[in-house]
Length: 293
Image 1: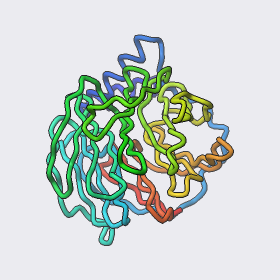
Image 2: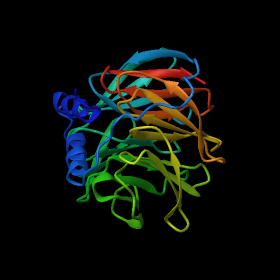
Image 3: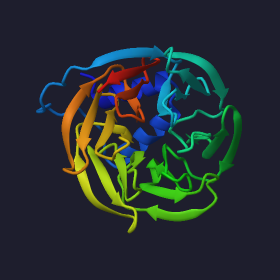
């Protein structure tokens, strides 16, 4: 019988998802894999869910600071889709070469930061469509922007670290070492903590940013991937790829308090500025789920 690891390999190959293939190969070389363990959690609570069709292989998602626009990186289409949330439809696309992966919007809403692991690039898009890039010799998988826009956090999954840099990936402000295949990052609103998904260990690492060290870990279910923090910092949302759920974590307690069912390979996650909606990319369906919280 095919394992979840076999299924992920096949799906990665079908989608020509080379960063995922590299991640799986690196894990296999170290005797690691993600397999589904028995689910002992309560059934997911019901939520109102709608979907927005966005493209071929939506990876990550970010929402504008005013809540009017959604930005979705499409790995296979080499683009970022711009979604008008009033009509829940794509109104523009921004060409991005090299296979965009993780993405974050600046706090002032004027730019996007896009990770391109195959090309070892951090792209900056001055909205609406002025794209520039910095090649810095590392493969970023996930990206988050600090609340003042001065610091960018890059998950270097193949190097087991997070690098703290500037919007041009030129400065090296700090490095968080001793992580375990980090793929997703999210920053607390006060920038005291960084939450890092560790894909093969079923954990979220909590980093004290003053000391740039891991101070605790939060156990979660299989395949934690994208992450997002609510505006008040009270909730952390983690997408589980390809296990079709999103964990809701109480950050004060450091534990999962709810599970939300989604479909078809959730990878990226973002929460609306008012905290009422969650946006989740469905990598294999070409859609974004809009979940009313």
